[in-house]
Image (cartoon, rainbow over all chains, first blue to last red; front, top):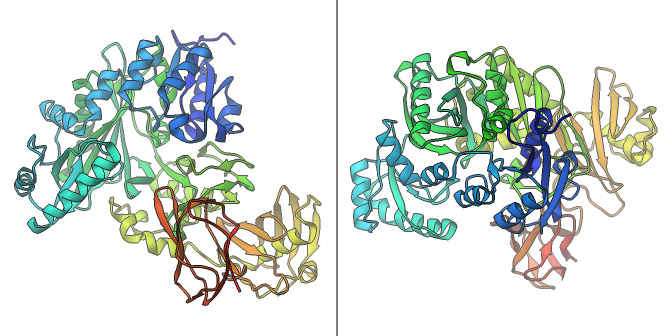
Length: 511
Length: 128
């Protein structure tokens, strides 16, 4: 294959990321005839993304700040490997304007928006002001220049109760405080300031009206360097726990065609207002459903999203491939009129965490790992059997994405795939996910962003089930043979010999 | 009930026929502890040993569920503790994790120190 045959300009891409998204990007590079350069920390020497790439460069120690978050090391690696472009993936350096600027300065194509867009959208206060100017609806709120208690308390009263205090530099729900009455304002402001200062080094706050029981609906947008800006419809991401998304789907069951169209137009206006380029996402809160639903701009994610595959399934577009083409200077390979939604896609994020113990992240080796397969089933993963899940990074192991003609068909397909997804050695949220997909609210699509906060504990305890006795028979056989591969039939007479009590129950044991 | 028939399919997978239906079961682990998967459910079980109770109190001690740092030790050897009493506090991923006594007893030894990075599966302290 001729290198660079697919994407004008780009010949060799350094992927400044790890895990499933690095593997995903490497695959897209290979299809386009672009060479891939992986980077890795001490903890990731044997990781699948390192094995998958054409070249690999060691960055440093396991902690992200010494490796994947060290912009200077990443740029030095790109130059040493002779890369001409850098794909940041999501997380890590993907939304750091200084990193995009450093790439630009080093003559590396940053596969993402210009650093100016990152700057404009990086400040929530600035982004909000821009959106108001662009005519994009925002949640009623204020960002007072006077940050005194008195001024902020007055702003809360004007916005109305319940109000939400948010750090300007924030993310991930840190420092966000709900104020339901004037008497709560002082304490909430103090706590929000403390957390904002500690986490972001910036105590600037703003105030919004709290939208109760909202849906989180986001619009995928794409822009090229030739003046084209299009949207690729919505993703419904309301199933989240502490602002961490867990299940995403497309289309959103609550959107009517007219609201969908209005949201798409608003997202395109937002992208146009900041001179956006490449893939991005406008996040909205949706209040109500059907034609009377109202939507409010939340923030713009200036990167590829974790949940991009549901859009790929429903719209039939490869977003990562498109990112590489657009970064190489090519025009978008599709127009707004040519884009339609077909069928329904659901993504389940598979996390190394134990829902039965308050979702504590898990670490350790994967003793056995087998992904489900079949029509309409896609697994984007960054682990394999034998991988050691490290405490240093995000606990997401993989994403299960299913597609089917209808939402109910997709839900059933996802359930069947989850029941066929074997991960042994560490706890995952798969049993929890199986319960969640059978919850009445999920079946009826009456989901909102508070669903898991209300139902999470119930679902978690329901997910610890007794296993069938058949499982015990297999364990007995494993004990008898030491797990050595000696295929052939046996019987539970051996189980008795191996000392397994047939009345021993297989509840999830934990030490 | 009929005796189940177990066929090892290789790579940790077993086909179990219990006379009613067939189950595909995966097992991995070592001689002490086995992880088992069937139909999306996962459990860990311990090989019964003489002098060892199955379940929570299997080891006469407590372990960390994950790699973590010891940030508080509330007990000392020889001290009597009641069930549920917080013995140690660990920190992992910016979260505090209290380690409580699985049963009443007397602490025999403390096998960790303040600031230690401890691993799962290793006793942090032992009871008499």
